[in-house]
Length: 236
Image 1 (cartoon, rainbow, N blue to C red):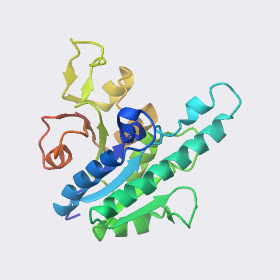
Image 2 (cartoon, rainbow, N blue to C red):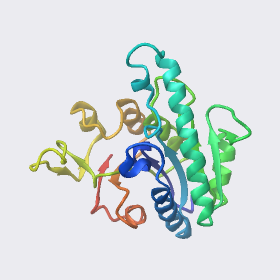
Image 3 (cartoon, rainbow, N blue to C red):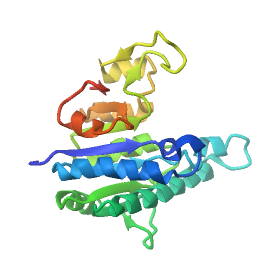
């Protein structure tokens, strides 16, 4: 592979901004410009976005009125809504974008086809993967890792609101210590919630590095891909 290829995972909650729900278009525009910086630098970019700003399947199914499987499908549809918004934002800043979904909805997006997704990336198009894996009980973290492995990404970047992984919640504890690097086994055994256990195990099986970083630090994604690990944590 001559070009670097990465998959960036954004949480749905990050799109909500201060409101805590829905989609903040200014954040969309900011993310689109960050992605454009990568594409302009010759990097092939795939994206997965969660749906927590709209609905989370586990939460929807808590009181038993909605079945867990139905709640998870509702969550998958939420990621499609976010995907459409992100596609529009990326096109607004001049990028070519294709969205593929794990659940067929041809009027909105292409169905997920690995060879087609790979070809889009090779042509410099941003590819957004939506609707999770298409199966209930699997998170968008797992979907992101699965797609990263399938398209041959060099790393998966989990873009969050913090600058890395800590031994405890830095928002609650002043003595929280940032972990610059940690192993897959450490993340699993110590229950450090970098991503869910299924996605970490899948990354481990495929030697796929997971980089956790602050999405709101300008140019952070580009610096990380170019080798600067100052403002992130790496699981490998």
